[in-house]
Image (cartoon, rainbow, N blue to C red; front, side):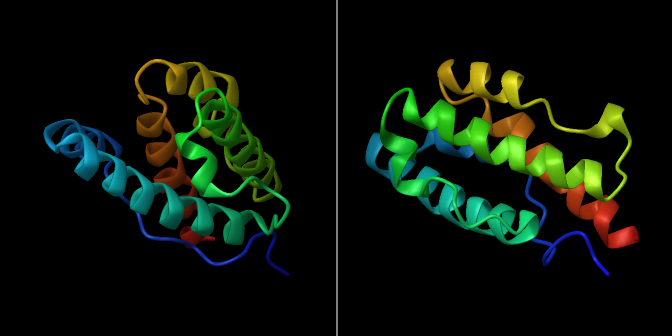
Length: 123
């Protein structure tokens, strides 16, 4: 019996961040929302949690950091269930703090999601 839902698609967090920086403000908002919506839906399906905040709240200051913290916490719980080494597990507090600093929190969040799906795919 699996302790997780379907595995999502890996993405490069640094590349996503750089592309978002290069786009215009409107393009950045659209790109960010598309990435956030898709990734958070995949994380919600993987962690099998349905009671998390909706991705649209990503654009509300402070709520976006809390939302990322909520998803990162759910991901950490699932990482523990599937037996991922503690050194590779996500740090929800770090993601939350980095989210407040110009959305940099998406980089460690996405990179850790990639590690989790890779680890779960090997099992």
